[in-house]
Image: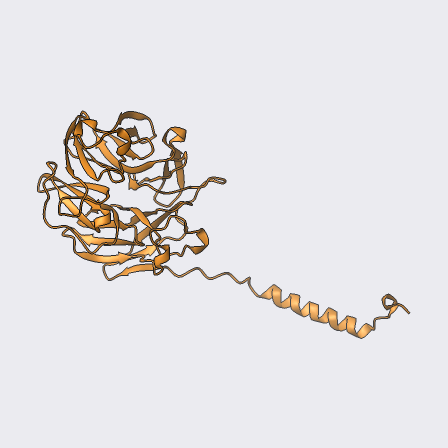
Length: 346
C-alpha cells in the first residue's frame, strides 16, 4: 500500500479540530498586541535638556537629501532651510519636519555652504556663500538670484580668483557684508552695503587674531555695536571682532573643531565637527555638550553609512541653529544627508 493510501483514524482528526477551535477562540478574545512606543531620548541635564526627535525631516517619495555640507537656519515663520550639494540646494521644511519645497537646480548644485537670513523692510532674503561658484549670492526665499559677489581681488590677498573659497556670510545692521574665506586663504573680508570692498582681517596663523579655517560666522549686536563671532575651526576656538577687525575679549576655547556658532536668547550653540553640539551662555561658559559620539571613528567623517547612525549621537555637526523657543536644529556633514532636531524640554 502506498503512503498516500494509509487510512487516517477519526480520533486524531477530532483532536486536531478541537485544538484549532481552541486556538481561534483564544485569538478572538485577546486584543492584538501593539508595539510599545520608544521612550523619549533625552540629551543634556538640568535646565538644558532636549529630546532627540526621531525621524525628523520627511522627504517626498523618491527624493534623496544628498550630501549635507552647508547650513541650517529658520525664517520668521519658523520654516527650516537646509543646504545640500544636489540640485536641491536649499530644502525647506516646517518645524514638524514636513517637506515644503526645494530649489537651486543645476545653477546652485554643488556648493551652497553658508547661509544668512536678513529682513529688509517687510521682506526676508537669503545670502549664500557658494563654494563651487566661489561667490556670494543674494536670493529671495524662493530662490530668485538678485546679485552676485566674486573674489575681492582689490584686497591684495589673492593672485587669482580660484584662491578664494567662501564658506560663510553675515550681514551687519547697516548692510555691511562680512564673508569668511574659510577654505581659501583664511581671511575675513568686509564689504559695504553696495558690495564695495572695505577691509580684510585675520589671515592664516595660530596667533590671536589669526585664523586656521575661519569656517563659520555669526554677527550680533552687543551694546549697540556689531560683534562678529568667527568659528576658527582648526585653531579649536571662537574669536570675536568688531567691524573694523579689532579683536574683542579672549577666545572661547574648550572646543574640538567648531564649524559654526549661533546666538539666541542669551545662549550660543556651536556645531563641532568632532561629533557633538555645544551649548554656551552669552559669556562663553559651558552649559552642555549634546549628542557626543562615543566612537571617534565616526566623528568628522563624511562617509558614515546609515546603518551606523544612532539616534542621540551626532556624526559631524556642520551647522546648528537655535529656534526662538529653544529647540535646536543640526546638520551633520554626511554624504547621504542628515538633519536632526532637538526639542527643548521644560
